[in-house]
Length: 176
Ligand SMILES: [Zn+2]
Image 1 (cartoon, helix red, strand yellow):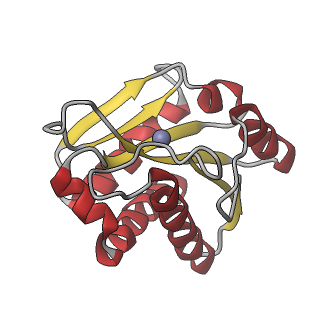
Image 2 (cartoon, helix red, strand yellow; image 1 turned 180 degrees about the vertical axis):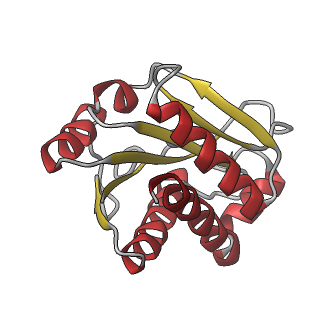
């Protein structure tokens, strides 16, 4: 089973930046690498769109997963809003009624159960990485980096590890 993990942003594109100065790209990468390590210990073959602080275009991320022949694609992001009150976890898929929608629900549920955030649910979205990938693909928004409380959580090693446990448990539950 081949899982392609896509840590959002990187390099010249830090993504959203928290009130505490935390950059989304760094959080995404750390949690993707932690998730990958957990999946590898469970026998999964894992690949990444990036493993360091570099900027990879959205179409290149999808192309890498397509060329590698991934069975599933999981993009990892933090959410952000101009209103700092927003918080919680959500997961996105491209089209309703697909395997990706089922995967999104399974991973979102496993994640919320592990990290105890507000469950915002799953949504259909026309994101390039979801549209351009040929395998079931989802995009996880772990929590809001724009919310001071969640930015603090996203800064912590323990919470990041829990995020990785939640994502990997969802993938394992869905694929076994
Ligand atoms: Zn993002």
